[in-house]
Image (cartoon, rainbow, N blue to C red):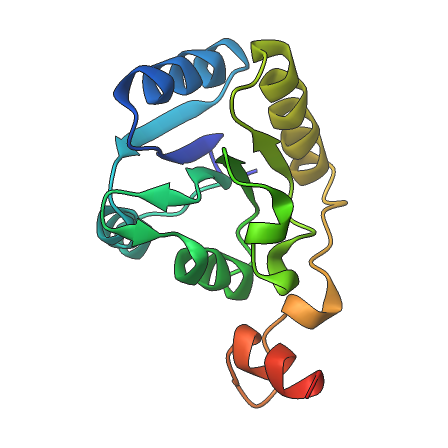
Length: 147
């Protein structure tokens, strides 16, 4: 792990606060929360994070481009959303997801699992989500391979 730093991108202030509190309890250092995709990109440009916890819908839009960016940068992440898995782009459906509303214990298990996978370096990015050797974006390469 880098420094147990976790970026939190959630626009519901009460929920974001609860997520940050839980992260602290689990030994992580939450950064944020941010309520906009643009803010998340700004923080990612300045700093490194062990992983990101994010809602699918923030104040300035969905986080799918952010998710693709994280995949290409090999930064693990977890979606927290009220959307069904079918509403997520097909190439992001394998990403860990906690559905709202949720029990705190469920989120705690998801965060612990993700943290453990990172710590033991067992987290593997699915092959279709990795950046290609020629630098083609992860999303473009995958979309082209299925057409």
